[in-house]
Length: 427
Image (tube, rainbow, N blue to C red):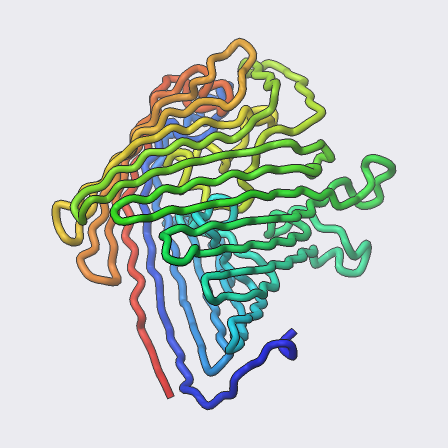
């Protein structure tokens, strides 16, 4: 692939950089996680502190770039080994005509990150072991991504089986194209993904035979941003089959509008709709239910930055519903931001949350969530932020998510994030 790129010579300076990130976040939860109603000890009131430390090394010379990020993730006082891994490790060749090729462990971010994003809120964000190549120039950006995952224990026999690995798919092919319209503050993107999921088991017979099932996801995103105003919209569909060999027929649509008349305040409003299954059987706690469906109509926003959407308490698309079904989601929200000081930002958002499809014997409304957030940046490399979320949940919320039954869900957090550059050399 490198032989196809018109690469320039090495007659340029070499740049080496070293950055660190020190992130600590304390959380207090009350009713914010799934619990077992038959176990009084599982009531989910908890307080804990998470931390993440990263060492980020960068290299650039001529047409070659490289980056490695090593991270440690843990919980204060955790018994046993914490997580230490390589978050990013890639090399990239940049041609002088806009072509590029990149290989390694990549943090992928596209458009508003609804479908493909790093979700940096979580302590171990998603990365992809992949090859990426494409073209960027003259308002056009076209990327192709190829990924293939394999279990170490299966590299010899049967050789192509993959499940329960650190990446959520066996193989993934993605094409992304973006165009910035000349003379107009308009950007348009198209996305096509072909995702292979492992179904069946090794040595299985008939319908239980190990086989790759293909999911297709395609759609588009646009952003129109004239002075002081931004309008975003997206639409995606899913087809093919899921890892349970059930036919997929799902879709989602979203619209968002922001108005920022000055540096002091701004407003935002939007609506998300994600399709759900036609019939969702919601059994009472402790009861036995045998729901079935022939077509999976619950949209899955696959590898997006889920915390950015659908409410900050992360009830949706980070954890499953009862019985593994999804009734979809409607998320209508409105909010505002206010900056009374140069380095201080305050924000508040209200969400109305409901299922996307009708439920048996239950109302669609899941609850009302209010979020308050503040961030202060005393210096360039330090950010102190805090937030508080409150949800009044309904019986539907309690039954679908097995959330706290008192209808009152609360979550608060305080975070310190330091990300200075500690070394830089050029020769």
